[in-house]
Amino acid sequence: MHAHASQIQRANSGKADCGLVTRIITRAFADDPLLNWIAVQDARRMQRIARLVSTTVELYMPAGETFIEAGGKGCALWVKPAVTALSFWHTIRIIRMLCSVA
Image (cartoon, rainbow, N blue to C red; front, side, top):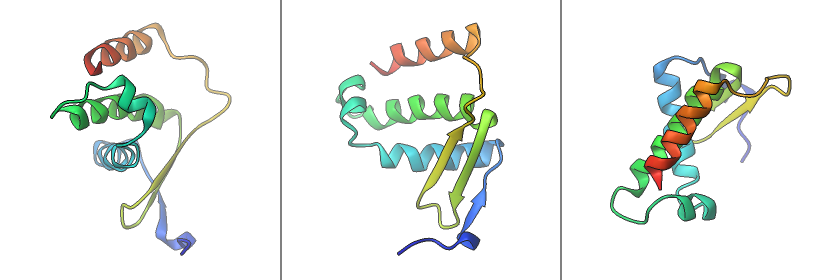
């Protein structure tokens, strides 16, 4: 079954929508082979994956377009092709986050 356009809403980069997008993507990638390789396989694995996703969402959501299915079952996060590389500080933040996940 396909969602109708009225069931899809544009997200904003506020805390509530960032949190919802983070939860949706974390659930969707819970069994992703790459994330299973990166994240330590213990009781806190899902927290680590959520931290990775949260950092990514917070950095990229303001630079692109995000849409959420009205029931919170799915989302799409696009970064515009013209967006330049991350700043030095964003890169440091990602490296720190990756080290904390592994």
